[in-house]
Image 1: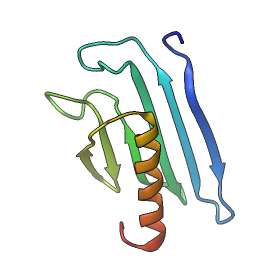
Image 2: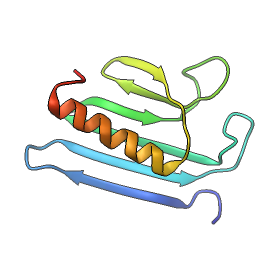
Image 3: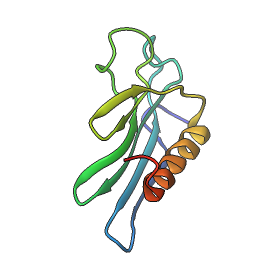
Length: 102
């Protein structure tokens, strides 16, 4: 697998119009991204991001760039691997649908 290749890419529009979009790809390993993985997973309802996971740099001054957006909040995320990432994201979508996360 070479840098820049998609590992996983999926977009789904649910019956109610909610959008689930996931993209995980390989990137060059760096000190800020030792895993060599870049990702963006987002759940959108009526044009508003309800939950999003990504590891774009710039949200934290030091340490890992892994984080998630919950509404307007940004919190650090403990990245394990891409499979755990998808599992955690899917669980958060379920929590939103059940009203646990608002």
